Image (cartoon, rainbow, N blue to C red):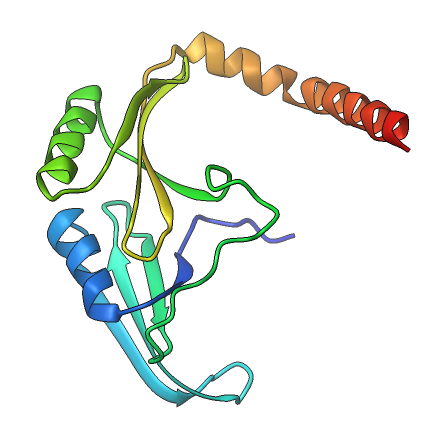
Length: 171
C-alpha cells in the first residue's frame, strides 16, 4: 500500500450549514475555508442538491459537513451507545483544555469532564448536529506510550480470545 500521509478531511452530515459554521468557526475557532455547492453528487451522479463545507484545523486537516438542504441531522446508530462514536481533537496543553471548557460553557454548551485517561485528559460535548466531540491533550509519559505500542498486538489478541469465549458461552 502507498504511505498514508495524514487526514485530509472527515465528513459528517449537518442539519444546517450556517448553524454548523457558527459552532465550528465562531465557537471552536476553526475557519471556514472551502465550500462546494452542487446539484449532483460528483462521485455517483445522483441528483441531490448539497453544500459541502470545510473547516481547517491547525495541522492543515479539515472537518467537513454536508448540508443536504432538508434540515435533517444524521440519526445516531440505534445499536451503539452515544459515547462510542465521537471525534477527538487535540489541543496543546491542559491550560488550553481548561480554557476551551470555559469558552464552551460560556456559550451554553454542556461539557462533561475533565476526564483523566492516564495518558490524555479530555472534555466531551455535542455539536449542534448531535455529534459527540472530545477535546484532548497528551499528559502521559513517553515510556508509557512506548510500552503500550509494544503491547498493543498482544492485548488485542487477549481481547479477541476473551470476546470469542463470551460469545461462545452465550450460544
